[in-house]
Image (cartoon, rainbow, N blue to C red; front, side):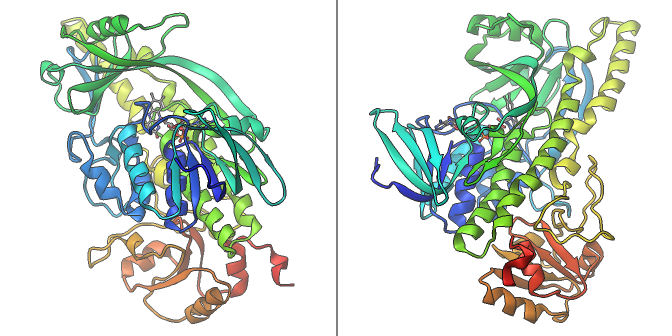
Length: 543
Ligand SMILES: Cc1cc2nc3c(=O)[nH]c(=O)nc-3n(C[C@H](O)[C@H](O)[C@H](O)COP(=O)(O)OP(=O)(O)OC[C@H]3O[C@@H](n4cnc5c(N)ncnc54)[C@H](O)[C@@H]3O)c2cc1C
């Protein structure tokens, strides 16, 4: 291991999804960075399984969405159904199809469908890709210990966990993507606000050959078991008959040894098979958000600054999008064309989004198996049928939104950002689970499959893109290119004459940011003042 390199533009602590995404975003923009991870590899915890459409769109931009599809343990077209049952070996109560939009079909709403895949597989892919990028270095068995900062740099003390050697790294910026127990959060004096411990739960990974064939419900990504013995989620996790079992709302003081976990799986499923427990992991659902995400040159991303119940699958996906938002801004600042307001905008854009999805995740968490259970649910005959019909309706009413909320995945808009050119007459639509594409400033640029089969997003450049949606090279786009070149701002002009685009974007010119959000839309290029705003320079820059 080379520990002689002690200077890097960006030091990233933690090679979880947020840290790896940060390394890729920077590395793709040719900004060198060093990622330090105290474990000896990525992918320790078998936690997330939902990779949202937006995350896969980031992967598409990085050129690795196809590789993630290829890594699907059961094939990317495995049906993403969610089944509510009394037990895996019991009655079916309700079925939700195409949860999270995982079906590999083309719709104009997105360039990539979601994917059900273990987090450790995604992390392995992100690590492998990060390591191909020039300037990106990953050091495992390396612990971030402490840091100080001055006006020019951050001085961090790292420790090689194999040798015990400590050494210092100097960086222009430090990103704390060091997870829920973030040391960096404490070091910058950020406090978590909210509630710790909404519920206590377990995540058990086990092997059970024959389980898929032993139940009558058909293929699904997860089965919610609504029974009095152990309200829980269970589902296939990986090839090799590997499954997960997640008892929810486990009372304080109850612990699960491997043998107890195996017995509980047997009881909860009602299926008597040999269950080999591979790991048991206690986790606590909380609603917590840091009161600040930054102290000068140090930033927080991912679980380090927001923690919410995993129902709806937002945590990891949010962390990756945090890194996309911060990554291009740090790159722009380091390259010199981005101004100080770019860095200020990170927290102002991301924190309200985190608050929105925290509310949503807490809402999802409020109705788990324990709340859905009713007496007689498992009885044979008319009384049992009536109880099951009642609970089936309740599930449809209370749980559908958890699995069909594209609006919270693609539809959030940055509404209070200093680097977006808002127009009071052109507000973003309010947040809603149903995705309504909008090209209002701050929103994700609406997606479309072009007539030649390309994704609209594939026409965007790595920097800003000025989209002339009426197909005319007028309205000042030549001036825009000249001004961007003069100030070193990467700008691609894309002239597209598809009438559907004109309708979707509702303005002839649209300026799209490197992260595919709309920075401005209008009739005529307003000039240098707009470039200054969207690249984070205060208005007085040229005075
Ligand atoms: C049961 C469960 C299911 C979930 N399901 C989903 C889901 O379906 N979809 C979803 O989006 N999210 C889900 N989540 C949430 C998701 O797992 C987390 O949000 C995600 O892992 C956070 O990523 P991160 O990179 O911010 O932090 P982490 O994944 O925690 O990574 C932080 C990394 O930093 C390292 N580190 C910490 N301190 C140091 C240090 N001092 N020095 C060096 N390295 C350090 C750690 O070893 C770790 O590798 C789930 C969570 C749970 C518990």
